[in-house]
Every structure is written in C-alpha cells, then in structure tokens.
Length: 78
Image (cartoon, rainbow, N blue to C red; front, side, top):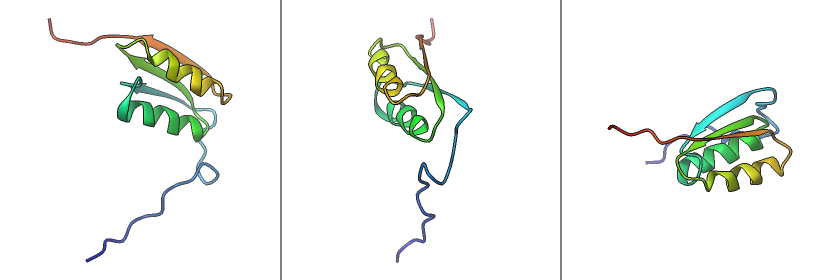
C-alpha cells in the first residue's frame, strides 16, 4: 500500500527571507542539514553547537550570501 505524500517544498515556493532561524547541534548531522536548508530557503542562521567545527558550517552558509552567527555552547547536567 503506498502512502500519499505532500510535495517537497522548494526554495522558489517558500521564502524564509527576513527571518532568523536558530539551529542547535548545527555542526553535523540533522542540525547541519537543517541549518543549510533554511539558509537555502532564504533565512539568516544562528548556529549553536559545542563543537567549534560549527564555524565551517557557518562559513559555508555565509558564502551563499546569508548572514550567520555562531554560538559555542555546551549544555549538560553537572
């Protein structure tokens, strides 16, 4: 049995221009994918991670013309 799925939104159909999206865990995995995708849709991105490699993700996004802000932050129980 196949499921009906909604079409995948495209950047030309949905605009996040003028918005700022905060993404946690942005250095890799799902967080990185989300950060890059919302930037593709026109958002500026605040990237938060405990790993300083998040700077590389920010540089990649900034190269597309989006504004970025990086916060190095480790949240853990002490």
